[in-house]
Every structure is written in structure tokens, then in C-alpha cells.
Image 1: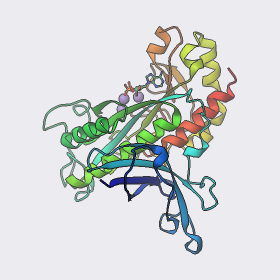
Image 2: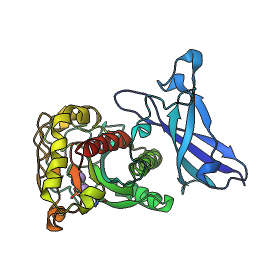
Image 3: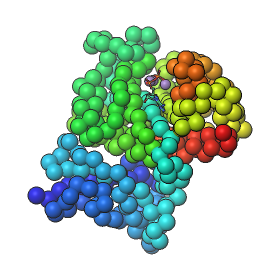
Image 4: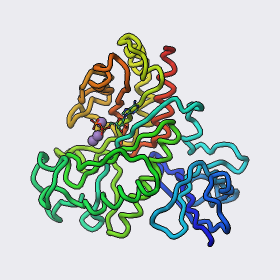
Length: 336
Ligand code: ADP
Ligand code: MN
Ligand code: MN
Ligand code: MN
């Protein structure tokens, strides 16, 4: 039977890139990445090429089954320019992690959004639900909104083979989180993007959109959405030395602007110093400190400075490829 390969890529819109995809039918398909041919698309419709020479190339880099489609596969792609070099919108190609020594666990937060009221699920058409407090990790029809979507998404991700580690209802009404962990920065980014794709597509069947903006309710007293980046490499996993951790953490201090540049649009609205965030202007770290830029998990200290770090600044709309790329660059620059 012919297979349906959904080629997925990121468009060239700034400052936030969106998912695009189209279906390729392949006869006698093996299911293997190496048997996914290069393909092309009209880059003039995605802000990736001028109309006069519009072809961009799709290079398959990750494949998994598409559990919601007969004979289906999801094929994550990098975008190349017509000369075969990585397109400037291609953050994945900038990751310097050839040996997959970096492990990433991303905590992806998002809002389930009602396109008709233009508010999160759980918000009445006029006004607001009760203030924050009961929604985080909640159960019950007064507090948890859209669980059927979240559950379907979890099942589909697991069936696709994505390494989801957990889900939870978040602090704001209609806000949820999933966590994905992978060994290798590219793999972690691929899995987050495919999981985002599946969530968007499942939302379609419920008439619910996914709001990835980091502060969709503005300055009101509602939490924003983050994408905390938990990371480690062999050094962090085995250091056994507070001094080594300090050297790595200090390497982040002079490059705050470079990090914030890829940590997602409008992050100044989210990183205010309130709602479990640090100010966008500061750089700080601390053990168990959820008000710091980078949190040192208690677990890491208890193991004798062996473990990982959590950069709490990336937001829900950030590109995990670019987040991983800059973290790897900065960790390596510490020279330990
Ligand atoms: P919290 O909400 O308390 O910040 P979560 O449990 O939501 O924490 O997320 C913690 C993340 O840290 C998980 O995604 C997990 O995979 C990740 N993680 C755990 N150990 C490591 C490690 N050694 N390297 C990278 N990430 C890790
Ligand atoms: Mn979490
Ligand atoms: Mn969270
Ligand atoms: Mn976290």
C-alpha cells in the first residue's frame, strides 16, 4: 500500500516561525529515514524565498509513525536553499552537538484557546474565571479545561514513539504542559516540533487552537508560558564539583542578550520577576530557586554536583533548536 509521508518544516516568519506541512505519497515505502527523498516547496509563500526563484528544499531529518493516519509517517525536515546550503531560517543546522553528548528535557507550556471568544478554554465569554490558585495540577470541571485534548495528544505522542515524560495542568486556567526528554539536542528539538505539530492538528478536530504566545493574557495576573530547558552534558552529569558548575553558570553571564535573542518573542512581557520568573534584565542562578534565570535542581546538589541545570528563560514560542544551539555554545565556552 502507498504510504502517506507528512513532510513538516518551519516557515521563515519573524520573530516566530510556524509549522508547515504537506503530504507526499510513496509507493513501497520502507519506513526508514534514508528512504525519504528530498522534496521542495514554494518558499515565496512562507517568507523563505523571492517569487522569482521560489524553490526551497526539504531535507528529511527525523521520522516516526503517524498514529492518526492510515499508513502514515511524520517526517521532520530541515529547510535548505536551492543551492543545498542550510536556509537562514534553519536553526537545527546551527546545533554543534555532533556526538549527542548534550541531553535536553524541554517543558513545553501552552494555552488551549477558544478561537470564538479569543480566550483560553475555561474563560467565560465576558469576564474572567476565578483567580489563579486551583488550576495547577487540578482535577474537576471547575478547574481543568480541555483534558480530552491533552489526553489524546499524550496517547498519540506515545504511539508515535516520542519520549514524553509527563503532562500537567498549569497555573492559569486552560494552560497545560508536556515534557519531552532526548539524548542529543537535534533529537530533542525534532521531538518537540513533532509534538507541537500533533497538538495543533488534534486541536483542529475540537475547534480549539493552541496559543504558544508567552503572555497571551497580557499584564493581567495570569502566568505566562515557558519552555524551561533542562540540559546536561558529560561534564555536568559527572562533575562532582561545585566549582565546575560555577564556571559553567558564569559563562552564561556575559551572553544574556545572545540567549534572550532566541528565547522567544515578547519575553520581556513574561520575564518580569513575577510569576516564577527572573527579570529579563538580570542574570541569576540558585539551588532550587524558581525565581532565578537558571535553577540548579536540588537533586543535582544532593548527588554531589552531578546532574543537570534548568534554564527557565526560554518561552513557549521559542525554537528548541535555537535554544539548544546557544546553550551548547555557552556551556562549551566555559572550557571545563
Ligand atoms: P519542574 O516542573 O520541576 O521544573 P519537570 O519534571 O517538569 O520539572 O521537568 C524536568 C525535566 O528535566 C524533565 O523533562 C527531565 O527529562 C529533565 N531532565 C532530567 N534529568 C536530566 C538531565 N540529566 N539532562 C537533561 N534533562 C534532564
Ligand atoms: Mn514542569
Ligand atoms: Mn511548568
Ligand atoms: Mn521547570
